[in-house]
Image (cartoon, rainbow, N blue to C red):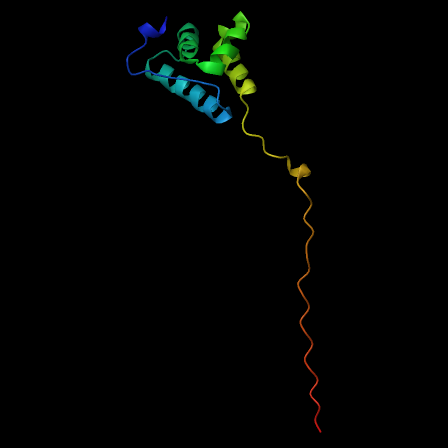
Length: 114
């Protein structure tokens, strides 16, 4: 299948901007395959994915081995590995927090009674 055989309302594009775009693209591919009754049609899905690649993502895709390009399970893993989520620092690498005790109450002023 080439992009000319896709229904007119399917226009999935993946440019390889970041992990969020990768996740959105994969979800869109899955939803589209289900909607078209092609959820188990590996060849249809990998053709859909390849037709949506643009820019840096297309260049990366072309360099993938043929087995990965032709297997949706391998391809989606490769996409997520290449475009990981934005890094969050691990909890153990955060600076430690030191509790600061509350200030003691000011003692009352002694009043002289003369």
